Amino acid sequence: MPSLFKEFLIIIALTLIGSAYSLVHELAPRPWAEPTLAAGEIQLADAQAIDVIWLDARPIQEYETEHIPDALFFDEGDWDSGLMTLMDAWLTQPRPIVVYCGSESCGTSQRVAERLRTALPDAEIYSLKGGWDAWQQ
Image 1 (cartoon, rainbow, N blue to C red):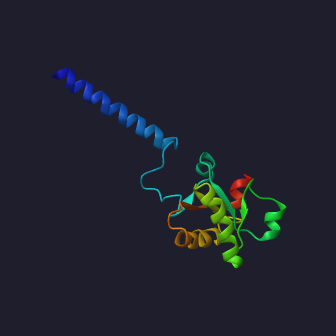
Image 2 (tube, rainbow, N blue to C red):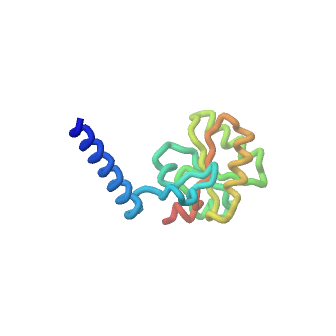
Image 3 (cartoon, helix red, strand yellow):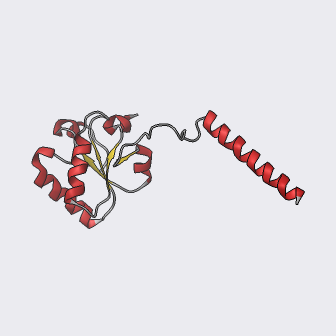
């Protein structure tokens, strides 16, 4: 029985040391820290790890200059046309949809994503945290 108690203490000690190391070296988020993602947001690395439909909600001039490869242009002002284009791509091959705009503060991607969740309730829809700026880094 004493050896079982020693093993238990060793396991606890190793767990505490590992947890402390992770917190000090920022390998794990601090439990008391604010979440880095808002509801419905996705990090660039996570979006790149899965096969998604990219939806560019920036102005057409910016889209034509440069955009994420294979991204679809989505004009919030011409909702019906953009929705038809998106539905054609999504119904052909259903996969998560990631909307992005110019930067984290632009807000367009969050608005478009929210409206799309209503229009396509079966789709998995996110807005890209950091927008186009995150892609360029």
